[in-house]
Amino acid sequence: MKINLFNSTLFAGLIIAVAACKQANKPTQETTEKPDSVKTIVAKVADTSNTADVFNNYIGLKNQFLRSNVKGIKSTAGMLEDKLAGIKGCTETAALAHQIATSDDIKAQRDAFLILSKDVIGLLKGAKFKSVPIYVDFCPMADSGKGGYWLSVNKAIENPYFPEHMKTCGQVKEQIN
Image 1 (tube, rainbow, N blue to C red):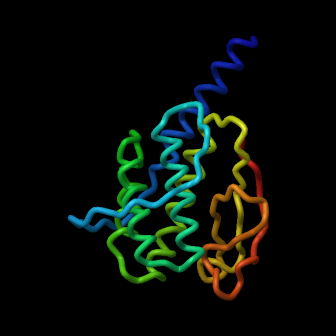
Image 2: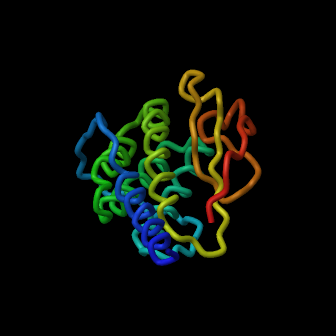
């Protein structure tokens, strides 16, 4: 019975990780620009280096949104796109990162980040982590009052959707480790 429960849990985690990046109706754009380097926080992820790299680039992207730095957002989104493209089933999520990387409109970038965040959260929930607490945060005001999620390595709320006016709006919904 223990083996069947373990195998079922392992199989469910695999299904979640693969399906996490698959969402319909995501627009794509193309570019030939290469992103600049951006430092990110290093996480210890047990499953694949690509998943760890996705997480690190995602946190870097979230931090650029906190600064409202369009150039930094574009650069980091390009790096995130490359890492997502290396994970089977994440093609559409990589296309979202590409959309962010090629846009000069921070509102459009934040709109795409809403969907991208849902995908990355699903991907990371299916992964195994060591020692790094990851918080799933939620702002009820994001997405025109529909709410929006994002990931953070800090328990304190730093809202990437409203960093200028409501930086502390939101709450921690869960912790992934």
